[in-house]
Every structure is written in structure tokens, then in C-alpha cells.
Length: 51
Image 1 (tube, rainbow, N blue to C red):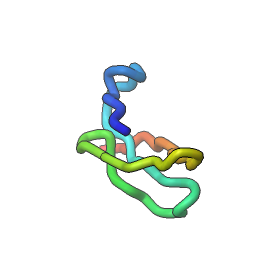
Image 2: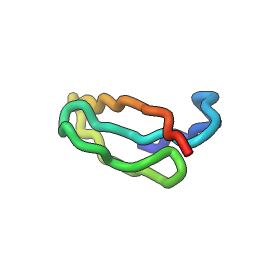
Image 3: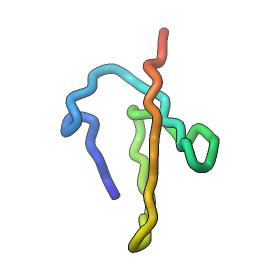
Image 4: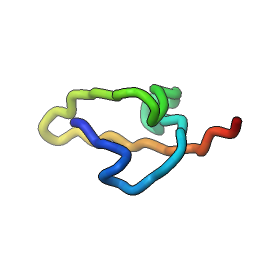
């Protein structure tokens, strides 16, 4: 799965938190790739990073 932040209309940098794994998995400033099997789901929470 690949989602470009421009496609979902967000600006700035956000941290990406995987709610099911209960861990931060990156930021919107970098490429995040993940494989999703047939009936699996992925749920992310975005949190705006402050400078």
C-alpha cells in the first residue's frame, strides 16, 4: 500500500502511529510501505509535529 500525503490533502509533517501495533512507524516526511494481506486492516493515527 502506498499513500501520498498530497492525495489526502495534508500539509506539514505528521508522525504516523500504528494503532494495532501500538508503535510509531514513521512520519509523513518519509515513504512508508506495508503489505496488507487479503482480509487484514491497518489503522494509523496522524499527529502534527511541532517545530
